[in-house]
Amino acid sequence: MTPPDAPAPSDRPGDPAPGTVYLVGAGPGDPGLMTARSLEVIASADVVLYDQLIPPTALDGARVDAELVDVGKRGGGRQVPQAETEELLVRHALAGRSVARVKGGDPFVFGRGGEEASRLRALGIPYEVVPGVTAGISGPAYAGIPVTHRAHAPGVAFVTGHEDPSKPESTIDWAGVAGFPGTLAFYMGVRRLPEITRSLIDAGRPADEPVAVVQSGTLPTQRTVTGTLADIATIAADAGIKAPAITLVGAVAGLRDELRWFEDRPLFGRTVAVTRARAQASGLARRLRALGAAVVETPTIRTRSLDAELPDLAPFGYVAVTSPNGARELMAALLRSDRDGRDLYGTTLAAVGPGTARALRAVGLRPDVVPDTYTGEALAAMLGANQPNWQARNPDTPRRALLVRGSSAGDALPDGLRAAGIEVTDVPAYETLAEPLDDRSLSAVATADYVTFTSASTARFLADAAPGHDGPHGRLPLGERTRIVSIGPVTTAALAGLGATPAIEADEATIDGLVAALLADATR
Ligand code: SAH
Image (tube, rainbow, N blue to C red; front, side, top):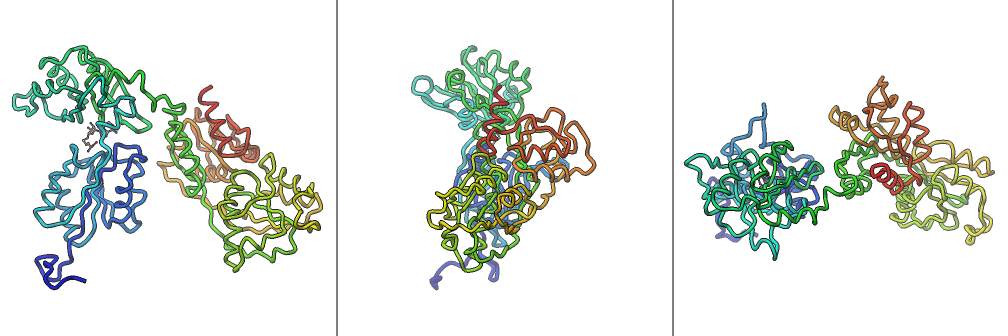
């Protein structure tokens, strides 16, 4: 309750209390370096005003009804002037909205966060600062350079390289900067590298002092060049190093050769497209990213529950699921009809492979049977063999199987079961739909080094997304040098039907198998 003597929330009666403005640092680029607080704030804000240099997925968690405003660039690429950005902040906050002002790195390190906070304070608008991982520390870290080190650098100074040191009115005190006993981290300075290095040498830093320039630090496109104060400007120019980049001057830059790690990851510099449904892509994408790949998620399919009704399970000796989705649908269908896992008592529960088995476990069900090869044929053969040890609870297992599958699942499993004398009830529990691919996604797939297919439908729907296409990979709209990665024989057969031959097929039809096969190909 508001105490009677509380100050009025605003001067004019009837105005809403101003919303809080969050000055949020989103880190240098790697989405994993966003803080827990930044994600929380972005997820709850009414309005998000964001800059250019934020991680590609930074705003994925924003509310669907949130207003997202790009203040980094507008119209013909014009940067929104700072005054205009501040006006927007103020206007939304005074209208009672919570505003996340999302910036790259840390908002208070060359981020104009201080100016924005002053403005808010002056107007009585409440604000919170959410610090971020700054590029001057994280870029070097991903290049294998610690900015301080007991043996090499007792301190680090963050310096703007934006000033033109050749101008007499330059505000940078070069003698002071050069005299700093430790590492110098220059932001915004790549274009001025010749002037910066010359000024430092003129002011007394040794010409042979190690220097590293890290472009797009922490991103899959990270590039690092090293040299000395004397030659780094030429080296960086020859290598075509561009903004955004951090220039690091100091003995610590020499540690990179020993400590580099990120750029040495086996898939670093490779682009891998993941075509599976967005809801399922994250595990595969995470594994590929951990190996250093630049992953583009271009889901070609999505699944939709058909809210299936399951029959009474008592007459069935077998219940089989052939995808993680099927596993989830099985349990969802039981719960919908006021049943649960206990209704499976006495049946033999079968999963086509380890991923599906994991999904069963996740809903509290332990599969009795997983075949050695993860195909419908293998599963049918195994169930058909009717091994007595599955039937400990139910020695007279009825030769009837309930399949909970996608509506477009293949015939191999039901045909195999029928051939083994098992009666089949096939319940379509979900359907697979095309996920429309925009031009950007299509071109991302077409130019990827690898494109992964984890089911026949991911391949078919990619072909459907480019009607009439006929190229080096048949109906699949992929570039000539793109290498196709198939999870297993069923997907490979579907690819063949589209006129495409995978360069790689996983030995084991699982996500792990697919990643292992891709890795082996990339490091061959
Ligand atoms: N607030 C930001 C800095 C903004 S100034 C922070 O704390 O990191 C913009 C400068 O930051 C760029 O010119 C570049 O010098 C640096 N920068 C930002 N992201 C970077 C990245 N991923 N790699 C290297 N430098 C980066």
